[in-house]
Image (cartoon, rainbow, N blue to C red; front, side):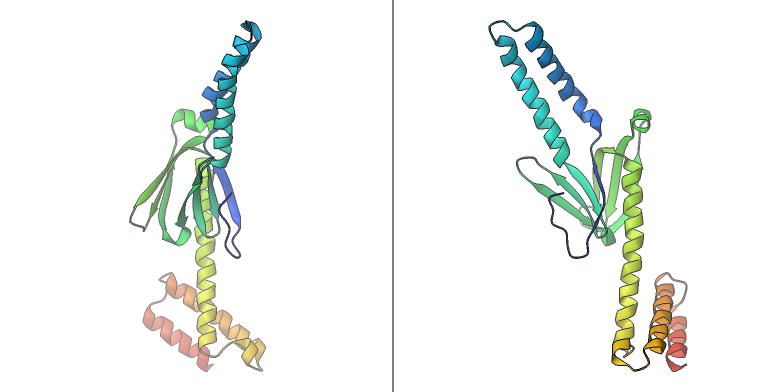
Length: 209
């Protein structure tokens, strides 16, 4: 993947279009080799085969660099062999991921993936994706991990804001326990388990205990 990674960012999955997109270029390259072997008359057979072989090489290299990458922060769509184009969809902006496969797609493990985001473009379609279910599941899992990371970070910041940073107190064990309880409490509020009033009362009980 040519897109630089951010700090603490790691790659979860790299996938490409299905190998079936290389069938035609490979077939033409094979035809070129046959021409070069059986119809080589004063070098014309070899001359006719070279463009076909170069076409296959170009399509293969293009297949290698045109990728979809999933990291713990975003989904990256990269294209271009001689040039480079990259499109990113942050995990936090993705509302829904779906995929569908034809009968042959299920047999050969390729299909169509649609990503709906909160951005103005609405949705992004990926066609002939190798392992569409794996791509969809990886994005969903990455979203869950990202949300958990964000909730933990927000809870820690909240604990620090009210003076519970254990590095600034002599009762580090007690402060750590309070911070943990606040993290759990904040997560319940974010999930909708607790209302704002219930959250405030429970937070007050923890801080005053």
